Length: 134
Image (cartoon, rainbow, N blue to C red; front, side, top):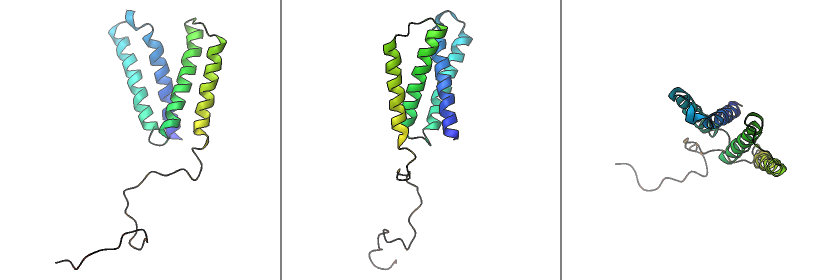
């Protein structure tokens, strides 16, 4: 659950940082540093989300929700035109992101490898070879 919070916060930081870029050219240096901090924080939190959420699912969610947010906020805050074809494309992105995540929580999903060796009585463990230690 924490990974999803990281991902959603990363998306919010990325969206706010990207919107800030639009007016960065006439702002003081402190505003530029704040924008860079937002974008850096977004990528840091995205990397934290990758630890628990499969990369394809996390990145698709990042892209779809980020693009949706930027498109809608661009229309509302910046007066950018939002044609129906853009809305259709955004719907396709959201659908694709949802389909990628559909099978993620299935029990057959492969778990990451661990560094723990198999138990000594494990039949998959190779039998010792050779003679006695000197």
